[in-house]
Length: 114
Length: 113
Image 1 (cartoon, rainbow over the protein chains, first blue to last red):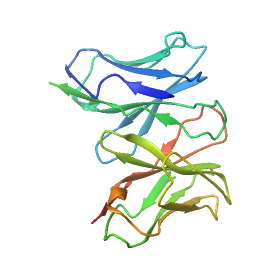
Image 2: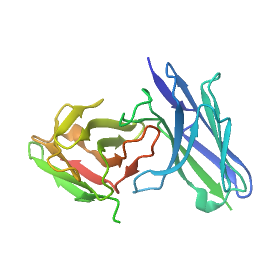
Image 3: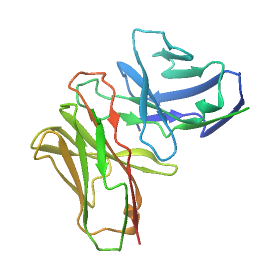
Image 4: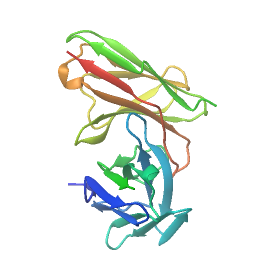
């Protein structure tokens, strides 16, 4: 069956460390993959998009990689802060078409302790 | 711009009651979606619309109906609510480009007793 999985439900790290979240997918060939942040009681907010021909993308302290051979994306937050504590969702478009609903992973809840 | 707004924010229903959730977006987006989010299940697509007057079923459409009479609005209806429909409902919209991000509303927390 087609799946998109985020390897852990929860990740606890200390402030200042690098958080690494993993998203794996099977039976898809997405042209791009997206990452969202969701705070408790709020809707997801878009963070980054990476295309299949981009190995890595950065935005401030965020870095995303995309390995189409491994069918995996890694999401890194460097110099993590307590304010980074949230649930992070990966998502992909299974058909690479405008308007297609995204398929979301279940998310990884990151807790950064000071 | 308000982005995506949802009405109401909270609602408690009794089994068998009906209600309509309203989603509105002011970004002139063609595509709109309704998701439900349950603990351990992630976001699951209920229905979606690729334009005014069109709707389609998603992954979990049973027990729900939708309408998109105006481009900016997407309504989700529950004709006869069941406890299994207790969930947080999110509306999202996006533009017509492939690879575009989705913009989400703040959610509606629905409890069916």
